[in-house]
Image 1 (tube, rainbow, N blue to C red):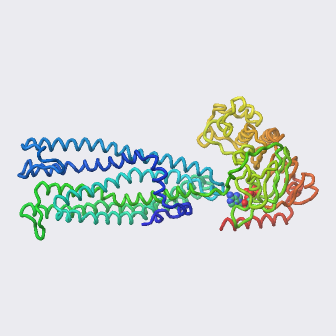
Image 2 (cartoon, helix red, strand yellow):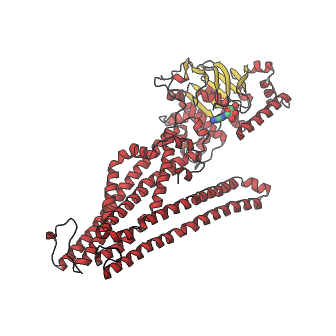
Image 3 (tube, rainbow, N blue to C red):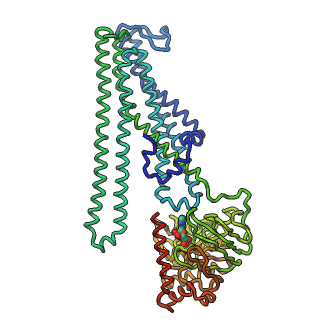
Length: 640
Ligand code: ADP
């Protein structure tokens, strides 16, 4: 069974294939620092398991010598040291058995400490390193992966490594010591009978391996069908309003019943296989037991049967029978260990593949700090596409003087946000250049750039935490007074003080829900605190009522007063006073100038303005047709 069979439709297949020898890397890069725990785990595993076997060996010796006629002797111990009376021999055997039990308990404890410590430390380091690397990846990596898929690496994959390093390694050593240790003792006692007893080992190994192969795809079906149930339920509960208004409750109940039935069927199928495993194992183990008992019993009663020649004492016979029972259960985990290893292999391949993911934006090692004095920005013949196939921005050139405002206008999908992502260097231009005060963005360090370019978006993400923590996000050193001043300038102070705990109110996913307009003002206050030289306002005012818009506009005017500002807005009234307006269509600049100049030009901008200002009812037919064509093209590319 290849590791790939376990992971269908892996969104990280590309990364997984890049990683070479991921398990070796895991041990080399992360295991090395935890060598002590590893050694404790290995040594204690071997010792603890060996001590588990000792009582049976001692019992078998005692049966023959203390209760039988044989000479009392222990391997590795000179006979002269051993007691000669039967009661002395009994006491010695019992004492050694007791020591084996207590010693075994102590080593089981250190064994668990060793493996758990090894696994937990590696889990912790791998998770933090992976997260650190992940958040530094380029934006396009996030664009075509879903959050859930990224989460799955940080949780499921990392956990699987931990499971293998702890349970898997633990079981593997137990299996190894049990099978090798028992086989050694049995072969030493009587290699002929041992061959009969041990003949079930490969059978059990094959049986459990086969079982895992059969059950794995069934478990994959179960996982996929439970995923379908969850998404159906999530989707329906999210769309409950539509369901009610469309009166489709019965229809939806049927759909839920369908996916639930699939889950039931998949589960039942897996259960059907699973519940046959242990009875099957018992049958195989029973064969070994019965065969050993029968052949060994005959051996003891009337000497070596058939072709056999070696002698067998009652004590050895008892040891044989007891040992047969002991290696069955470790063997039952054989398939499980292989499975855990394969999963861990796939997981570490994904993790290391992700860590090796090349950065599309490579920082020049000799990059200088960006020094902004005027804040002048020049786009010179910029061409850019997210992939090699489609050019999104073509030959875009403009120049903004320090302190001025440039507004980007154009239909959805024209490339306005993309133009500004290039200024933040979320991506590098394919051709041309973007300069700030004469410095090419590719020649300056990314932190110095991002520090001096502020970004206020329409939909601000609030982290779980207090309002104050959200305001100071990125400007962690700000004191209370500064925070309040910034909130006042952003027209946010009023509503914040009205929240249940004022600045200490918990917001974000689990906290108080803020409206879009409120979140936007938090974002503006954040930008005021950060005090960047250059500012990007992404569709900064839309979707709010007129009063809120006025508040936001007022705070924005304060924020943008003496900064170079780039604004994207659908409502043209908000950017009417911009020093420069650039109209984009299909990634190209189609018009540019001040509001008055563009109105005089009577092109796309003038018509959009006319519609928004209520001067004309509808855009001319040619603009609508162009919009329809764009829409159709977008659907085509989405379908690809
Ligand atoms: P606007 O801001 O004018 O609405 P965008 O810059 O967001 O336009 O998008 C321009 C084009 O680039 C659209 O066709 C969009 O589908 C595409 N696009 C935007 N972001 C990405 C991305 N991360 N990966 C691939 N294509 C993208």
